[in-house]
Image (cartoon, rainbow, N blue to C red; front, top):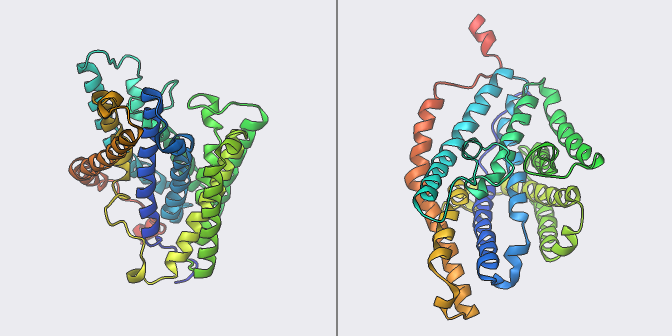
Length: 366
């Protein structure tokens, strides 16, 4: 294969597996948050409560996956339309249906009102002054923002697309810091939020490794990422004392190096000998787990009280662990019985918008 013949990167089982693992860690974090706020119980010493790097993982992952999958579309303005349509069909159906379902629940159960939420922005994953109806979906507004920036860069000449993506991310984040714009989930603080550095870092990792494979470099980079993950999670007080841009830069480097190292390592192995597999489909179901686990948590904390468990920290911890397991199982069920049928239906619609490839116009002229 020559350098002038771009191709889609092969599927990376390791990245898919990590996606599932970190989706479970997100559930653990939200369980710990509910435990502290509703029960005043510091689950498992507060490790899941104080560390929020799971979200940083997913932002870097988005940059890595999107650039690896769509870098071949750079320099093809017509392909950006297909890119945005396909990503929209991938994200919106599950978000909209689960959001409407929660609005229905909030309307039916007394004591809980949907008036405090902005329903339309929640359905469209738009920035808003408060958290959306599905609280965990606040990250999707950033995902949509990143996709718009990526689409704009892909429309540029092929050689300018990647440098422009990185430059825009750096200028926005550094500009926000220089002009003392406070990071936020809406307004100017949304546009200049340092989270965009994590997205760009994932793209940089994908561009650096591309089709290469190296067991030695892969192991070294993975070891560096693991050490950084341990340091960042154990020294969270020090890390949280830094400005947001430095916090996000830290995790951007750690996870970008980790993804790059894992890709290099996996590509150096024979597929049949690769051990890190998505056996339980947690990676494939990560989006469903991410959006749906809140339903189980809200129900669990509403029905069960610490007094019912005798106030014993041991049994409280056991119950919370069981709640995490039930949340994950519920997410897997949503994926199998709702998200997959939705995606199948949406793919039939996306088929009407086939992506245009380089040279298609010249073939038509011939």
